[in-house]
Image (cartoon, rainbow, N blue to C red):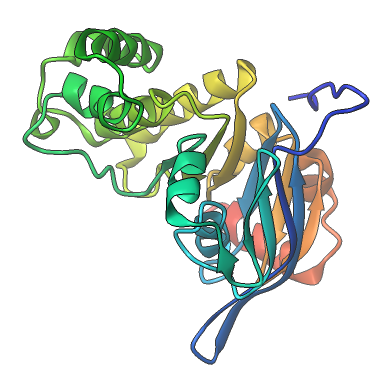
Length: 259
């Protein structure tokens, strides 16, 4: 995928500066800086335990970094551990969709209601309007015909697509994906990745943590390799064809080697 065209005055939709995060005495993230431009797809790869998911969770303050700053949509959400007031933070989070490894659907609600509940409760939409929006998002992920089903009646891939539709129903400006296919059976991975590829082609700004190297190669504008910090970043063809850092080389060799 070619990099998105930028106007001369384009500003990052998300900017991270000198980020640091520790859990007790364990330093998980250090010295991370990143700019994500509108319509850009940034894919984060790296070995397990390298801090990928923690970085993503910091982006909407599900985890609070102790050092550095994060700015989203021109708003500073955290600076050196000081976070926006909760009301302002929650308002900003509505612009940041997040899809987790687990689907987190409400089992007692239909697929339609799972998608419509956010716009109704958080955006104050009328029921009919929220349901129209939910149906449109379900159609986008190929599940219009399952609107009246319950989560227990869906496959894992369908549940994850509902979770994507639910995030899209909030009409976010950026989407965060935390290993969205890792809990799926291999034969169901493709249907979720296809939805994500379609979103990227439509210009959705996306930050994706994944072990799906084919997706990273085909869809990313930029690939970040993490090992507690960003050890290497660049275009997919650079990272996959000519990795410079020894840790990147060993990681890609282990994950791409047949068998």
